[in-house]
Image (cartoon, rainbow, N blue to C red; front, side, top):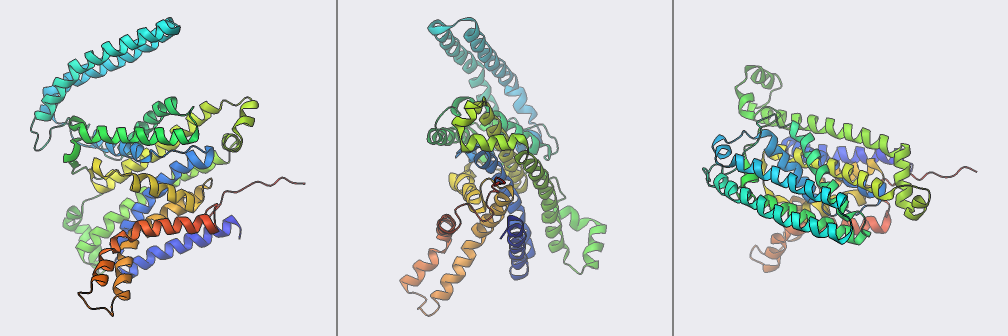
Length: 439
């Protein structure tokens, strides 16, 4: 079967599964799964840009997604005037001191060469550290002490949250640039370790810097880019529409909100997909795949491999950051503790591998399919265990154990899907198109 036919058949099956949930369970659940599938597909696209295009093994996906989520706070939450008055000046001076320290280090390395230059750079870094802490520590203590139960952080800019999607991509791209400068010269396995370690550092910072993110207290009540259900239920035009469609206004408002999110997310996915396809099929995309397939040959042809890897690493991370900001928008809150490797690294990699690395259509399909299975595995597992143990006594310990184990069906099913895919379709459900030479 050709890739085109595979795309039509598999996407039709995916649409059928979402419709099945709508008819069999509820349409609100179906649209909720759809929204998360769209976000997961964008994350999978970002990883596919890094791995499928260039062979970069990034296992720090959760860190870049978290930076995208941070953008939701920085952009959309209103500023806390009292916190700014208490420590805003100190934070500003900290930023100035940090930039000045970095600038002096760069200048010293340019002007002074050899071991002497390294020694001077170390002295500047140590002195800068103490200057930065001189301004930073009292500012943080003042900010976190201001109305700590309700705020205890600086807040944001109070802008529409939809702007945070772009800013989330910028945050993730900036972090990727710094990570890439450090780690992209490393071997593939060392790169994986480096990206995982740096992402853990990012999560640790977000959990502990309460002046920025409230830490484990979380930031809730982020503004929405769509209407609120309560507003819709009080709007005469919406009540008339619900009456015309013979729907309960509460149910209709829930459908309207989820459908509005789905339209916004689908627009973003279509734009990124179009750009990704253009890039993949351009001379730049062919060059990236040539570097992926034979780095030594590409270097021999004069290609700057490290620079190209940095480009693609930044692009893929930016896409993941956009998806992270969209997820925070959908949740309506920023919870640093939710960023776990299982959800934001392993699962995304499974999406890319099962869908088909190197093929954007495959990555998107993997995002839809794997997230759908992840959500439905637990209720289906519970139903299956109930059916299998229906002939046993209600107090039978085996029955109780099997029913209690139903929530753990998720990782079991994910592992099984991955094994089956690697055995029977190692290139994924929609494999990468390989150009054949004409004779």
